[in-house]
Image (tube, rainbow, N blue to C red; front, top):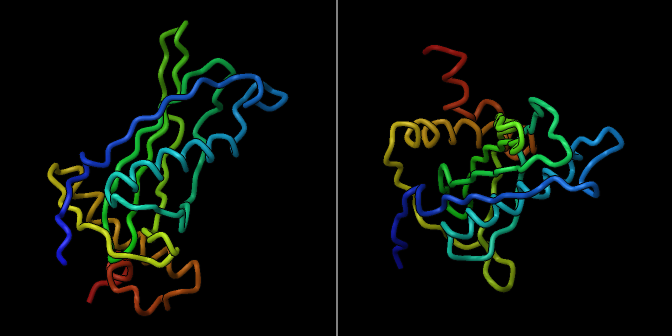
Length: 173
């Protein structure tokens, strides 16, 4: 059975959260774990839109905090699938923090999450292919294979010598 390919826009998800006192540390900054939780939810929704299936988080790439997010800020998380592999998808997230009274909005984080599609028994199942449309989507799609190889190497599931696309960045033949 062939699964119809989808476009990144089909998985595009926007999630908003208001940073409340229970979300902050003693400096009134958003706790990193709370942001990661929200990012995981937004990314899972995006992955489920693409797969039309239950998905489970397989990996979270490096998440760096560019600036503190303050009590009262509104967080906007944008997520969309950047590439589909056989049973998994990579989801790109961009996080924005907005202080509504001051009218300021700044990018706080970006990250890549990987999800695996599963059936009701928890067995992996194939996912639809992804067909990028815009130049930005094509660039993210192209880089996804290198990011995947790096993830697999770091997880001990791939030998560095087998990561041909990743090696090509460093070594010319």
